[in-house]
Image (cartoon, rainbow, N blue to C red; front, top):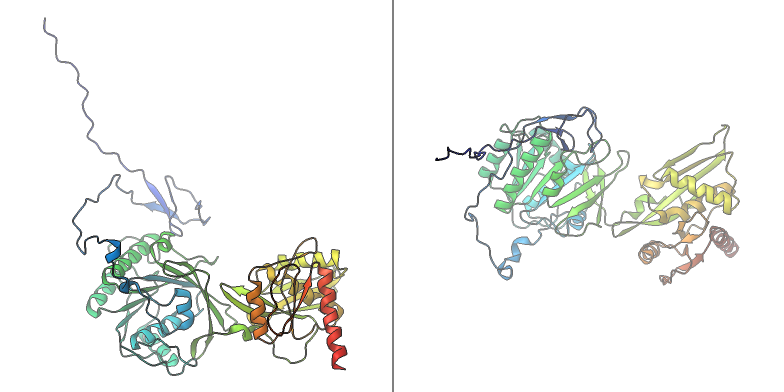
Length: 492
């Protein structure tokens, strides 16, 4: 007897569907279900529904369209050499200038001077200038081969940018200006103008009609950045993108934006100070420990090759409560003056106010001085500030702050030609700091003759400088007071 047909299991041909995803509009974090608060950036109400992505690869292999792979020894290195921008401080941060095909992201708070700096850079690049101007608003350096630069602004009108260019002297014949917010139109300008450098101010204001979402959202920023990066790599054109920052100081938009670009620079500065600093957070073509210093005024922005004078008072005779230290920003030593004021307080809880100094660090220094040096300020208001709007965060300024507080409490001035560098420990010990030789060299260049430093560092004193080594905070106070007594007895 023949058997009937068996039940053969059928092969499933359906594809797996992608799970619905929800994306944060601030940082790009994704989750499988909706939540009211982002699990990455902790922002409320920023998680929205996104289109589910198709599961599985969709890209197939094709033949190389631009160029075939070459042996590494046959690669032309001239295409990767940096071109100076004419702004020495920016070139210092970038590692020598702009590399063809490089994409630079410059982020900073509103009003810090990003547009002013990039307009000056675009003008210098269009003129072929490699040497900076002698003063802000003055004539630029000698011009070389003229270039074409496209400046795309999405935040201001073309007339506003023109007025700023007249004010800072950035009217260059090869500088083309376009006020656009549509990505397709921007790409059309690039095809027509064929620029040798592109500036987009800013990436959060450009949007694509082919992508859903509001300008500045995660999807739009990713699309705009990807299109501009593709243009930079295909044409070998350096591209500078201006980025916004959030209220906590981080770059707005998805974190993938920082991974896609080649260089990420932070533009920092206090709104009430003229000093501006540019530091590289990421740099594929140079170091990330360099800092560029600029002076922002009504005539434009000017690089500062020697910014130490901005952080020192020029009053003549030394006053009680003042001490100078040398901090290190990147590889650059900067002399900074710390000033303190100690006054009787009518309040039950005396004030502890700081400007440019970490308040928790001040509380620790006051506790150490109270415990190990007998400084009584429990019923006193204490104010500590820096000169010129500088921000001091490194522990190397602890000793200078402690000596300034002792000087203010005793109403006795420290020697005017003395600096103090060292970290103060909780046991009252003075600890070594990094880069002490560079700090002392900068102080000697500025004319300082004495330096209170940690003991046992083995550093050699610069010519014309006397090193006063201290192991404990009491020793440092005695050395500083003894140096002042010696100065006063010698002047009689």
